[in-house]
Amino acid sequence: MVDLANRFKSNPILSPADIHPSIEGMEVTCLLNPGAFRFDGRTWLLLRVAERPVQVRGRTSFPVLSEGGKLRILDFDNSDPLLDLTDPRIVKYAGRDYLTTMSHLRLVSSTDGIHFFEPAATPPILGLGELETFGIEDCRVTQLGSQYCLTYTAVSENGVGVGLKTTSDWVSFRNHGMILPPHNKDCAIFEEKIGGLYYALHRPSSPELGGNYIWIAESHDLIHWGNHRCIAHSRPGSWDSARVGAGASPIRTERGWLEIYHGATAESRYCLGAILLDLDEPWKVIARSHAPIMEPLADYERTGFFGEVVFTNGHLRDGDELTIYYGASDSVICAARFSISEILSSLLNHKVAKA
Ligand code: MAN
Image (cartoon, rainbow, N blue to C red; front, side, top):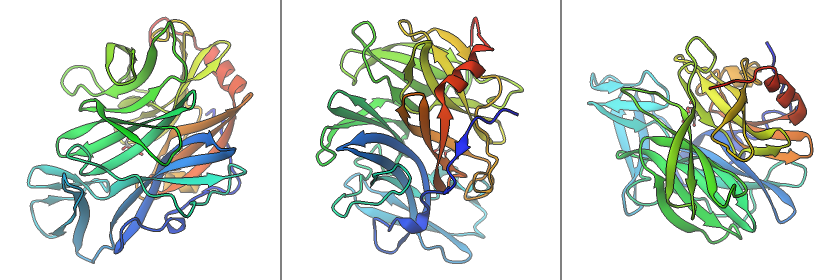
C-alpha cells in the first residue's frame, strides 16, 4: 500500500456543526468536497453543504426546490413498501429517484489554510431553475486571469449535468447554464489555454456500452465544448474498477499535466489516484497510478454518512507542495499535503501506452 498523503493533524478541519443551515428548520447533515482557490490574499474553500429537515423517527423527509426557487419538503413513512432507502444518499420512491439531502455551495476563508471561517456577509450559492431543483454539488474553481470559473454538478429530476458560473469578485456571479448535459459531472477546466483553446476534463456516463470514464473536451469560449475524447477508463479488478472522475484543475509540471482523480469500486470505496497528460496534447496519457495515492484509512474517512470515501475537487499548489482539500466519508472536510515530485515519481514507474 502506497498512501502518499500527509494528513493534517487537525483533521477534520470543518464539520457540519461549524456551518449554520441556509434555511431555518433544516440541519446541516454533511459537509463535502470543496473547491479551493486563492483570492484577496486569503485561502478560500467553496464547500458543498448538504441539508435536510431534522429527521423524525420512522419518517424520511428531504427538500427540493421548485423551478421558481420555492422550497418544498417531501415526507415519507419509512414503512411505505414503495420506499427504498438502501443507499443513504438516495431516496427511491415508486420508481423515482430523489436525494436524501439538498446541497448548496458556501464560501469560507482562512489566512493559514487550516482554520476556516464563514465571512459574515457571504450569501450561500443555491440551486437555480429547473435543472438544479435537487441542488448543486462538488464545485471545481478554475482561475483564468482575474476570472474564476465554477463548474459544478447540477442535479434535478431531469438528470445530473455540469453547470457553469463565472465571477471575478465573488460577490456577483454570471450564470451560463448547463454546459455539459446529463449524465455528466466532475468537470475540471485547465487553468491556461493550450494551442489557443480551453480544455476541460469531464465524466459522461454511458450505461449500456462504455462506462464512467474520464473524457477531455475543447472550447473557444468555455461554454460550447467539442472534440470530446475518452482518455481514461475504469480498470476491472482495480481500486478504480467502477468509475473514475477528475478532481480539480490539472497541475502544470515539467513532466506534463498532473491530474488527481477519484476512482471507486462497485462497492463505492473511493480512493485518489493520478494521471499525467502530455503538456501540448493533453488528450495523450503519459502515465497513470497503479496503486492509489490516497485511500480511506483514517477513522473519519472510513465511517460517516457514506463511509470509505476520500473525494477531492479542490487543491492549492505551492511549489512542490500540493494541499488537497477533500471530503471524508461524505461527512466532513479534511486536508492533506502531498509532494508533487513524489506523486510524479510514483507515476513514472508506470508509463502507459493507452489508459
Ligand atoms: C459521487 C459524488 C460525490 C460523492 C461520492 C461518494 O461520486 O456524488 O459527491 O462524494 O459519490 O458518495
